[in-house]
Image 1 (cartoon, one colour):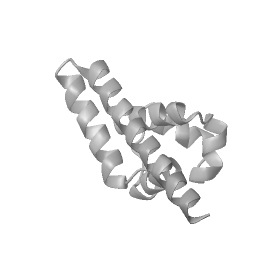
Image 2 (cartoon, helix red, strand yellow; image 1 turned 90 degrees about the vertical axis):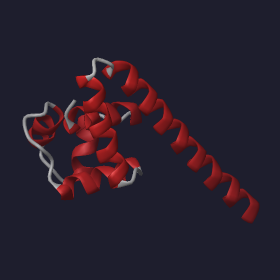
Image 3 (tube, rainbow, N blue to C red; image 1 turned 120 degrees about the vertical axis):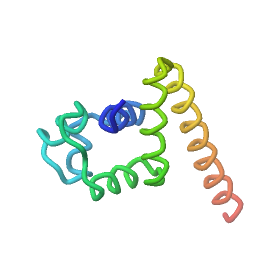
Length: 107
């Protein structure tokens, strides 16, 4: 699996439409389409913007893509992707929950 497919799945998980993500990444609709369809590789600058939008470390974003690609090659792509995405969502929800809990304690 290429990074573009991972970025597309993350966009869908986060509930963003392509048209909503374009201004956040400061790219054209055609460039976003080319990235998500693995016709072009995103630059490091674009990957940093994705990591900011999705609030994921850049290294985690790259690791997720590499792990998905390895799982696809082993024929276990779908299962591995589900597990990684669920883990990612779980970790993110814990981080958000911790932030809310910490903020409410300060009030």
